[in-house]
Image: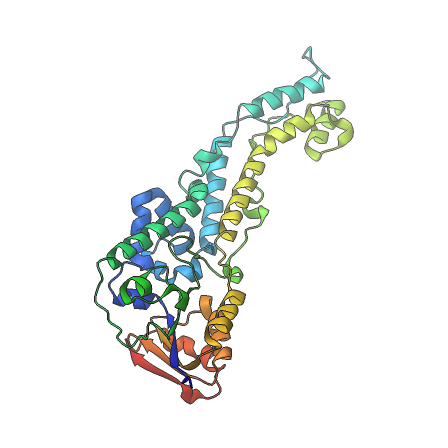
Amino acid sequence: MLLNVMTTLYIIGNGFDLTHHLPTKYNPDLFNELVKLDVDVANAISELYFQNNVHYWQNFENLIGKVDEHLINDLRNNIENNIQAFQDEKDTEIYYFGPEDEKYGDDYSAVDNALNSASQAHVDIERALESTPLLQIDKIKSALNEGFENMISQANDMNTKKPERLFNKFDRINDKFITFNYTNTLEQVYGIPKNNILHIHGDLDLPAWGNQDININELQNDFFHEIDYSNHQDDFDLEHAKPDEIAAYNASRRGEDAAFPSNYDDYLSELNEPDSLLDEVVSDLNTLNSSMIKTLKIEELEQWIDSNTAQKEIQSVSVIGHSLGTVDMPYFNLLADKFNNKKWIVSFHGKEDPVFKNESALNGHLISGNQLCFYSL
């Protein structure tokens, strides 16, 4: 007769790796890896998402992909000022020929002159973005991916030196492990078989990092609103102009189709090119932010639980080194529902540990508040 094996389900967070002195903090470890790759990109990431405060990197998963509202306003003002500075000395208005000119009445040539002027007065968008993090948009995601890979590789290399086993109660054959870490600490240091471990956030080969989609903000295309790219100087002499000149001039400013020469659309296109380029910047930033949405693997977790714990009696659930933060709370809600009649043991570092603030959501899924207890890590 086979006896039921009493097993523990361990849920492992980054505090577990940090206890083993592995370099897996967002600050300074990930940030330092990014600086090594490209200091300009590292600073751009810090400015876009962490208000240039390296301490905010500790809250990486809640802030990445969410651009600070004050920064958005600062970026808009900065870019508007730069673009207007480029345009202040440019003449892109249409000035129709006067009666004394041999081209009087030749509206096509008048528009063509303005078109040529506009084409020579292109706004240098890259220069306008020069002092902003937006210039680095296309490098940010790949830099973060590489930064994560380098950080994980360094930690895994340290694990090959077999650091001290700090947890001696693991039953490597029967216990089950759900880890939110990317490292191979469980396998390399503790010899836990891979089929007893679920890397819910992936590992070195495919790390899954990011933020919840509800935290990711999307900028609208009016991000750069009402920027006037044309010269504000207006020397058209309305007082002495003839009626047909006034009509043509007013038509060009009001947008009356009947008065448009055939090349007028080309002129508008030249004037609006900065709008199109800035729309591309907004689109690129939105694409970047969207790429930082962490896809939750709730179904994968449920399937793993059902297939790996159904034949065994889970005696308790032990959380080691995880703060129960909001980004991962959907996973904990499922786990608490699955094991709502089991004893839960949660580690903490000190009285200020965020786990005490976050545990209320978890406690609501358990049958009795007496099931949840804490111990100092």
